[in-house]
Image (cartoon, rainbow, N blue to C red; front, side, top):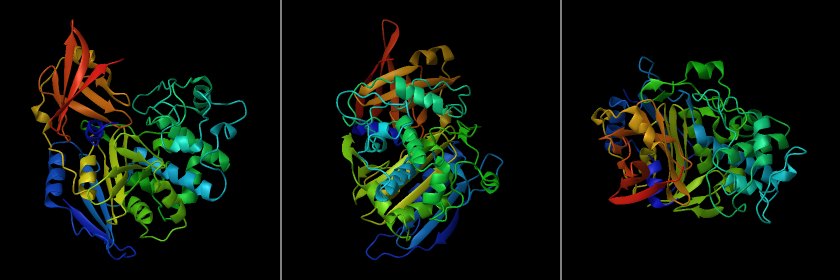
Length: 459
């Protein structure tokens, strides 16, 4: 992905403090900057998200900040409020892999065909076999999603995707490049990785997660299946202001099935920074190591992505399910970490990067009320896949009178119409226009940061 693509997709306040083991020479953040508080309050007031829960972790401890409610008529959120963390689950899967490597249960260079059930073998192009390392760093050659993914309920799309379907896809998939050749963000590969790690331990993914990570870190409210207590504290997911279903991801759990709170996630990030003593120290350190630099201006580790920042590398991941957008990351050089959880389909990644990297910028929050109505028949013409670069595409979808875009490997974002061909985003300062030729939509143009980027319609 190039810089433009990366920029696009990063598309009642209470305070509590938890002390961590202090580390000398590290940066501390005493409070949220006023411009961040203002931005969050605007997002809630404009209906971008019902709530936002933030944990700031530094050498002085952990500070929690909470805005908004679990739903329109719900209770105020706090550090125990539960959110779906989506693709942040992938870094947990990376640490599970790292721990099995350290324990000698497998090697990163081991071929996955040696661990798949009898009769299930992946096809490869050329001489390079798919390894566990390829699965964790998105170079397996597997696509973002399998082509036999046909959910019966689009509002809970992963719920009925079975192991048999996963194996059938592996048997039938013909790769278009060699394993290790290029980066392509793949939910399928990460879900398969979690499945294989559980098989290797004769376990389920959730049991492996609990035994290896959440129990040792005392993360009692980080699970896949909601406990009774977690359900009582659940923030309801929202898409465009409407409550939506929670997502269940049984087969590809390692790609995005985990639910958690800022309290638990703060412990997770604190452990990654070394503020909490943990048996996972070695595995976490291994998971942070760069495996390749094939993702444009990003490096990729084991699940984690790494962005160069003004004060050090930002090691991060975001997440998105039907009604949630989340962000977690840290900078080892400054010793600062962050967790940001929302129950909205609109990204707030810009806040996460802004708090971790002084060189990042906050997005301008635009009210949705500026949008005009566009006939559904016209919106339907924009649906398709637009290629802006070989490894960066925007997929445009329609849901009634609403138009959405989804950049390669990232959650979808809503687009709002200024007129029938020009659309703007609410939490990222960007616009997208559609162009026609001979009456047919043939391309879109992304306008952002004073630059224009053309994307040809390929599907």
